[in-house]
Image (cartoon, rainbow, N blue to C red; front, side):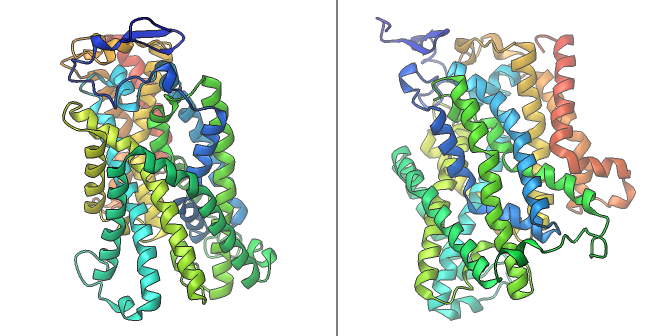
Length: 502
């Protein structure tokens, strides 16, 4: 052990003195490199993290939205599994720097984007997290609303003819659940840990309850799994499978494209690289596919039972006739959603907002900023229908996050060959200052990576008329993450060769 208390070891080959960086405006305790003593995450910890994160309502909705879009159960499961098999690769690659150097995501971004330029990827990642925070809060608040409507049916008759597009009762329930989230943030990381410990079993039990309900009311799994694909011959969308599959696959990658960037926020606590690699490989793709099967089975069952596809599990639960069973199910959903929301959608943006002004914005303040933006984004509109969920929300932001991942991985693995100077990451006049704190090369590569998907996005949200845009350019939007990642990766390498300090 070091004799100097200010000397910190955070990996076998990384040693630094905190006294050299504590004065810097780029430093605060939340963004500081973790020490070797703080590394307590093993292989099982990472597997458990992904099992807990994957068993969530958005995973269920992800699967059921594919059914709503026309896929049969096997097509939906294979699409989800493939998407997660793809995204686990950049997940593991970006996690490497966190484990080796003990640094969080926004600090890692400084190496490629510059000490000030790192705010660009950090804020884009944070804004996406705000959207997810709002979605999860809406799910929890809507569950509370459904419980109350069972006992006071008059609540269900409110008007939606307002600028929000939801009833006053729905909005109040949303705000109530939002306040619970803010209280947990105020309480701190220990409360989050307690919630995560009880969350996974609760949501898995709820999922199995829904699966049993579907099995019993649909006459077994036979009728559920025999539901035809809408893309089969003679079906409404015959011959259109591949035009739906590729954007759906991009959406599946986009689902965890957020965590594939900020995974250093978690991997910085890993004992070894093997722990984070194997733990993520074991925990992510299989768990997503297994929990998605519940969503697929239950959604298919609603088509048989009710003659219409119900893709929101909250709406499915309201069909339960036993009030006690409904209340218990909804409360379990609320607790599980709360835990996932804080862990997945607050930890990263809180760090990202803190990165704007490390000496003034703490983790707690960053969490409150996340919550406020989550309200403004009106999340109920993001998940109003399955097509909007995949084609507008998931694919659109994947077109922003893919290029960021391409720049970061190109810089760390190809340009720097996994070598970073930790001290200089916290010094405004150090190696990663570039041009006034901004890496023009990284910003240019990111911009070029985003551009190919922009026409398709603008046409998708009806800002421009797609009839006046090249079909080729429109089609690139369906591959937004892949195109953005690949283009930014290559452009960054070329520009960095031409301008090493640019």
